[in-house]
Image (tube, rainbow, N blue to C red; front, side):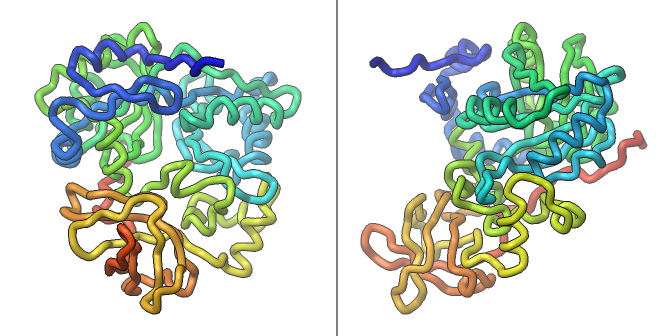
Length: 383
């Protein structure tokens, strides 16, 4: 049996024309870096605006046959722990799909559409490597009368960084005052877009869903601004790591509960207390008994980065955990890492050792994120 065919996003030719180094990722040929290089791409996004092709992600809609939002929200609340019924039109939440044992199958974004005539629809974005399994499982979990529509005609573009709002506002002034985790359906220079103020860098910015046929036009339009440079997967990873954001399959997986991962904030109080979703028993147990391990930020001493899989030891040389993400943080100006340690060692300031190339190297537990998050906190109403 041959290797599975590598897919291409609608922007593949644009990446190649820009000199991107293309690599296989989650079944797609994706740009890992452009001629600028990972370091400069990372720093540009922190200071200006970075443009990302994230069209490999999975996009879908949950649609109630009776046209009532309550029907879709009630059904989805049995699957995820977020407050879905409390969503107002145009609001977005972060959540996770859990298995029966409370382990994380994937994490996702879910929005209630605000577009007139569609505000009973839920829109979800899931991770590329998990999307086929997610959508197959979700279709089987939804009750009769609620339909999952997987979208194969939409691309997804992210514009991130402190100047992202200035760029978008030239075409859509109302976008400048959108609060973090809100969305609108609107046109950018005549192109229909679903625009959410969110992202995966720790910076202000937007994720823009657009029809495949319009993706290249929107990409070129945004690229025409001096503040905007293209950013590849390499800098996307270092940006999210500095921002303390989990990467599925690394920092969270089927063995990890939301409590262990430090994601309890994504489960509102009434859902923690009342349960009613898949995996609730594990979440309730972890809250009551406190998990044996916790996800923490780790700052190695010196310049050597600690990569995924690096063993964490206490000062007596006993193994207490493992690194799940690690590398060099250009904005932090040094190595940064995340991982899991036994609960007694999770306190900020705790000294630890990392086994790098067979030698114990000093490090300490620090508070996440490594670089302050700059999400926009504004008003839905224009100033």
